[in-house]
Length: 153
Length: 283
Image (cartoon, rainbow over all chains, first blue to last red; front, side, top):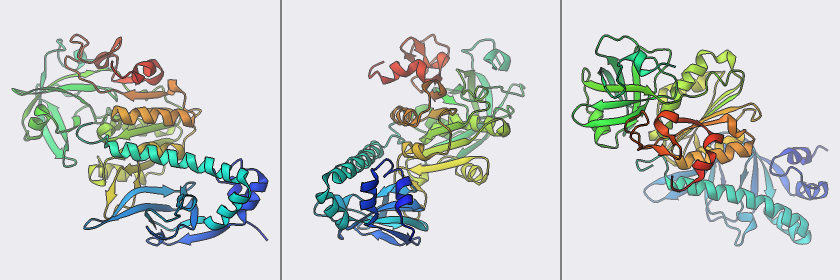
């Protein structure tokens, strides 16, 4: 039977991963698809997954009283959605909604956490890669907060 | 390149009268002025990236990049934001009103030098205005270039400049246009995030690409880092600086940038030639 291994191996996030680690990750992976408007996750819910986006676009939102949903970031092809599965108490901090038809690979967080505990090399490798994603997102967020295009720029 | 002598006056400090043909409000705080010479001169030759000093009589003078098509020198086009006394007065001008023009001044985008290469244009906020003439020039000879990519970042969807034109550009099959905003609410279905996040995914070959960048300095600093991370050589990156230009001919020193003057040695610089200066906090 054809597995997701070749697709995962080619994805920028997992490129260069040792085959044995890739093999472990594939066991936690499944193909998913979201129609435009469908939520991938909701703030406060248990973060038991993360997503590798293959096609489409996802808006990361926060819901403000009297303001409605505010998009703080969009994530597209080749990018990663979600790291709450990695950090206790494993709850989503934002909503994520498909802006258009989105295809992704969902990775089961519980399954991966167990595998990372059993194989710290895998855990460290994943942590390094997620740290890089977090660093990029933090930097982008800071730039957004600077409001560089405003009147005072 | 056209000079002020060819265009109008022998004295670069002497404004030449232009008449307002049209004033269009682009966003809540930006507007575009279309000017025509009032003294019978029919053309205003300029190169993409150059700027003019615009004088609102009795109020003052400001440097503003030319944002029109270099192939259409009959009309002089400027887009600016109403932020100071002069630009606020300029926004109130009516059709037929007079403006003094000195220029064009400064260096230009390397449109000719980029022939045969991929071109990536990175614009932030009103920085799209000085890059628009470069886009016109690239599109006029589209077959002479590889991929042409426009990456544009704005504050919010309401701040997007040249919205209709962007839509037309986006519809072209020979131009890749990506727009992102820093924040969005409501029914915005486009990208949200800073413009630098578009660079890793943009479809151009970094080994041959020429990058033209304009926006706030902070945005340009991070853009330079991303372009270099992507593999674009520093000698292929060009940026337009905006500092306090007053005389526009390198006399007054207001826009001194190390050993250079932005007004005459810029505003368009090759990045490797100002890389060290660009990183200095006080210059």
